[in-house]
Length: 58
Image (cartoon, rainbow, N blue to C red; front, side, top):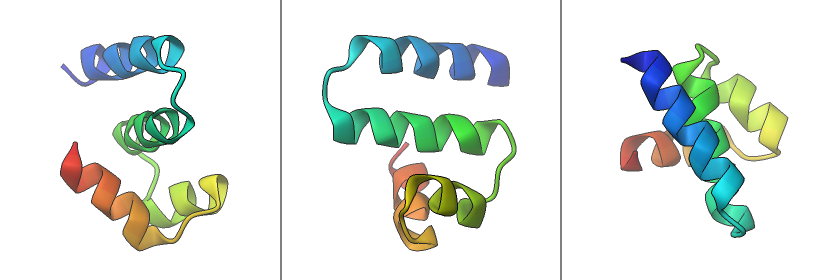
């Protein structure tokens, strides 16, 4: 199930031209891969709370 979600997000990332949406997809994909909110925030240059909001919205 988790791998299917990751693959679906990967496909969506390829198809979108919206940079903000791409970043959200990437944040959720990284979370599914086991990264913490803080790690993802550091990678994307966002605060942990923003990543948490992306995750909750997903």
